[in-house]
Amino acid sequence: MTTSTTSQPIAVTIDGKKSAGKLLENTAHEIKQLIHKNITPCLAVILVGEDPASQVYVRNKLRTARQVGIKSLEFRFDSRLTETHLIATIHELNNDPTVHGILVQLPLPSQINEATIVQAISPVKDVDGFHPQNAGGLVQGQRVITPCTPLGCLMLLQEYGGDLSGKHAVVIGRSNIVGKPMASLLLHAHCSVTTLHSRSRDAANLARQGDILIVAVGQPRMIDANWVKPGALVIDVGINRVIDTEGNSRLVGDVDYDSVSLVAKALTPVPGGVGPMTIACLMQNTVLAAEIQQQQSAS
Image 1 (cartoon, rainbow, N blue to C red):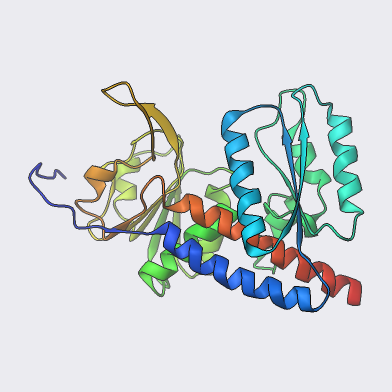
Image 2: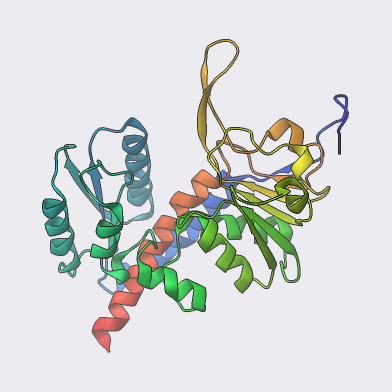
């Protein structure tokens, strides 16, 4: 399939900032109700090292937490931190009843095993939704804390696509953070789901069969119009920093926006699409964690 260079974009831009704003308003209202019950949701964020991108992400998360009324605690360590010290910090937070959510910003330095750290966080305080107990519960359809990015993607799809039942969804990427939980959420939304990855054969042809296309591969502008079914909903999870022809640094997604906007029904921009929803869902997860812990303590 080819598209004319004179074609005009037809895709609606999916406004993640606007959708996130509405979700944050609802979350702030829920927080006020919890505060009336003498419960102030509290999020502890741990940052190890000096990674510039991680510092930006943590700063944005903490700022948003303050805006909606979530108490935030920040723990910063240098890159020489030992795994033992980090686990000890997590155990202290696990045992602190005033802390409802724990987030360890990834990636971690090489001397620390990320899987070990994820498993050290109490499942009911795992606001990232990465703990094996939460991952398994999601597959089984249980009420668990769900990874923020896939959850945000699903909300955008439902807002712009309505009832997803019976639609064919194609997920490109099979990471534990996005691809796998995204596939589970789509199955629970009654979609037929295909997952593509680096070993998939004839991937572009398979992708073109999707009424919904979610892309999370970490390759700048990899997916162009040849991968997209006309009229599809396209969610671009990728965020890549590239240097343009004038030598300027800019952020782009895994989807070639200009090309795909000629054929898709709706498409997320980068930035301004999935990113704001991820942070909004983190706030929602912190509230959910507080509610789960309240129910457990009352039972």
